[in-house]
Length: 89
View 1 (cartoon, rainbow, N blue to C red):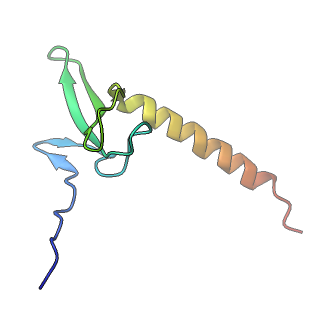
View 2 (cartoon, rainbow, N blue to C red; view 1 turned 180 degrees about the horizontal axis):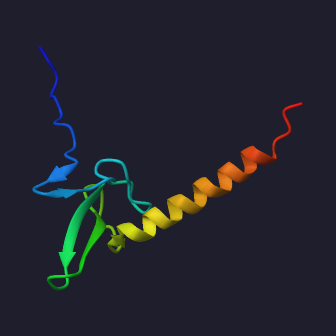
């Protein structure tokens, strides 16, 4: 008897691509974060990640994807600097 098979997370929803789909967990409750797009007007749209709240009633507010990308960039930059400072000889 086979166990339940889980469908892979989708990177594309329609014509939108979400780079963090299935990768980010909520810092408060540990549930996966879902990607969604908010449209302000015809020229402006914003991608957000919000908690699925599957494990508990979570108070985490949606997070702008651009803020996560900026934080990730800073962390990678810091790690790269540390690696460059290591003396291999």
